[in-house]
Length: 416
Image 1: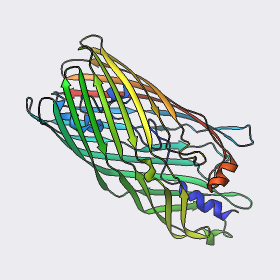
Image 2 (image 1 turned 180 degrees about the vertical axis):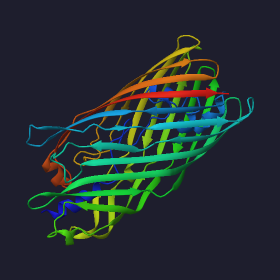
Image 3 (image 1 turned 90 degrees about the vertical axis):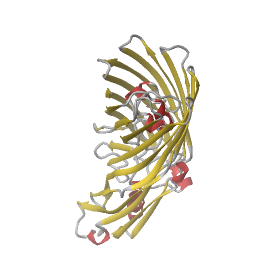
């Protein structure tokens, strides 16, 4: 039994592969935006501006409520170094969602609103008996932000906004196997994060009917789990004294994001947007665990992550085909924050490309329906055992990962 390997593998908690942005970040707020490659910082499309740029909300004339949901269908393949056997994920579906509602006087200078969305998360379930089973078998990471927002138009061209981002719900469930001399045991870590507060602020400037620009910033929040539950199964009496922990604590940074956006409206029917997102992933250096009793030889573990700051580039547009029907298309390139030799099973991350399409249909002057679909393909990502030895990251497995994700979305809008 390799107790050191087991202990270090415990550092895999609280991370995961996200659906539509680097690392474990999720950018799926606003079904209209989803159909346009995820742009929105330099636009004032609808109430989802609260997520992309609170400063743009005051320029959204319609007051209303919108609810959007997505389904993520991921296919992840892994081939261990020196093997020809391809392992794949068991079927799993995650459901990122967004709820946005704005209020204010019809002709007034301000808008107030409330946003509820899922900015970070992941669900992965690896194949039974795969080579990295002692690092990870299953992970389910969830986060829900609630954001009260206020936006004010200083002039007809310039508006500002700020929101209080509250980590209202955070949860993680991680499972992996434990290598014993003649069999495998199993450990499950399950915990809820404490409520934490950050902020989101933005500026929106529209010098003409054909041009708009925006900048926004969402602060970092540290998701902190205290008194999470530790459960062991399949551990024989001969080894029970080495696995006595019942509680754990850990902290995961939900990093800050700075975004710059541009909107171009060449005609009344055509809108084009471009965004650049800069995520301060370098805040994620190590993942440390404190247990209330021993897991292997110690009640404390640390595992290297050493993430690096990363950019995302987005481009998209919409065309109003008729008074009732609008079509959208877009794409994005995400630069992975995970360095070579630091890839983990819970974040088999890589540079990724995405293509999107979408449409809206206005049933009447108050109610409309949005649809979107994204296809995300990760570049093949390999790391050798020598890479892991060189980086002192042998708590993960050498091999090659390849991931594709399809994400359909549906949104309902009611304006008043």
